[in-house]
Length: 119
Image (cartoon, rainbow, N blue to C red; front, side):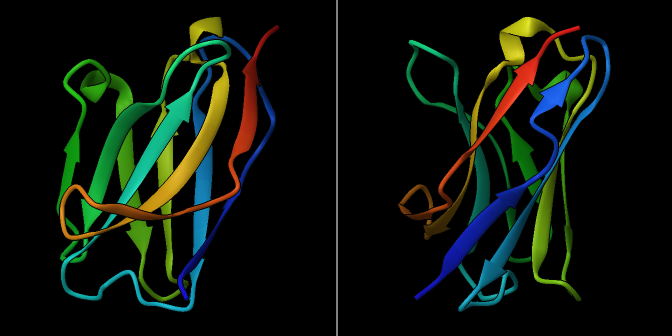
């Protein structure tokens, strides 16, 4: 069974860059037809898909976040990462890393990590 675990700081100051890492176990991030996403949920709001990196290393992003979102991977560590630049308090959310088996079939979720943007 594939397991995902988010890690990163829980507090980020406005205008700084939010950086999170997802460590994957029980499966390789290079397995064909696996897609690795970041999804967030602001307080009191629904889930928002942010972007994904494919098994081949290609990336694609939500149009509304593309200008300040970057997803990368480290295949040697079986990890993928999120960077969100120029954050504001509106970026406060629980951030999840998620595996899709085929697109967009989300099948495995990390437990989520709370990130608060505040000075």
